[in-house]
Amino acid sequence: MTVYDLFRPILFSLGPELAHSLTLKGLSLGSRLLPSSNHDDSRLAVEALGLNFSNPLGMAAGFDKNGEVPDALLKLGFGFTEIGTVTPEPQIGNPKPRVFRLIKDQALINRLGFNNNGQKQLVDRLRQRSELKNGSRRIGVIGVNLGANKESLDRILDYGAGAKVLSPYADYLVVNVSSPNTPNLRGLQSAEALSAIINQVRSSMVKEVPVLVKIAPDLKKNEIEEIAEIARTTSVNGIIVSNTTIERPKNIQDQYKNEEGGLSGNPLFEPSTRLLSQLYHLTKGQTTLIGVGGVGSAEDALKKIRSGASLVQLYTALVYKGPGLIKKIKHDLVELLERDGLQNISNAIGIDV
Image 1 (cartoon, rainbow, N blue to C red):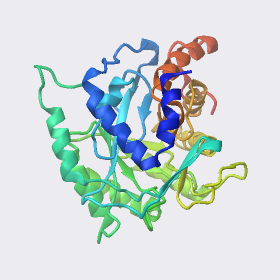
Image 2: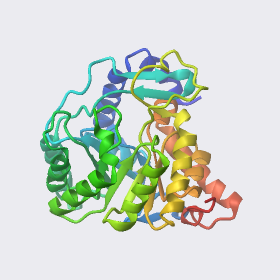
Image 3: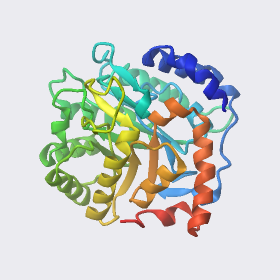
Image 4: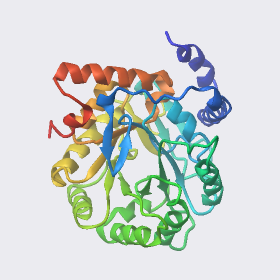
């Protein structure tokens, strides 16, 4: 039994958003007390997107929407963390309740709707982070996930606005066109709209950084092929596979299974991993893929990597298993590499496709 196992009943007695808010406050207050976790096994190091990652494990977007605790997350052992989704203007999101724990399924359903404090506050935070402190710059790979305001008159311009003000402080940017909780947003995954967004983002950036697209797991065959073609023919550097699903697998059991919103966690693992394999095949392994969806163990992470992911993200599993999961996954990944006779984690990328 872990320390988190003792605290989880207390957290689960609270509403999901309150528990999340308290977790952020705890990480913020305790960040200075956390030792830096920069001693990863060299076999877990990954070079991708022109960046160096000490390990392939990242915190997915959605946890740290306003960039409150990136350094605390890196100290917990993540190789990278992704802030957001952030929109140009602050917005409160959809009406509550809007987050549901599916405990029987180790899953969550959310219909948050890009609730965040807006770009200005995030820029101020990241500017402070980028300043020299004690004679040395803070290190760690930080991505920023960009979204569009619900009431925006021109969502394509929203993504450009985010790229302009946040590119100086981000190691990479993500175009999120796949949240199911903003009306008509997923329509921006079409070839024409997505190409226009990528061009807008590229032309708006003050500093050149890698640009990735985060896609839905619910795409049709022709839509998947279109996105692969965009990856091959535009300046997209990578694809994050995938966002939450609006589908409801038949085997989920929890009482909240029919709530509207995006489903994450265990039930998302298989469909998101299948999509990952498809895109790795369609892009001929030439586009960096980040696998996310249902990762809760080293076996899950390695399956994503063997299916084509250079990097892996998680979030929902931490709700159920706690922060000790990060260290455990990294430890177990090294053992799995030894079992499979692989010299390093990069040797596993796409070998099952």
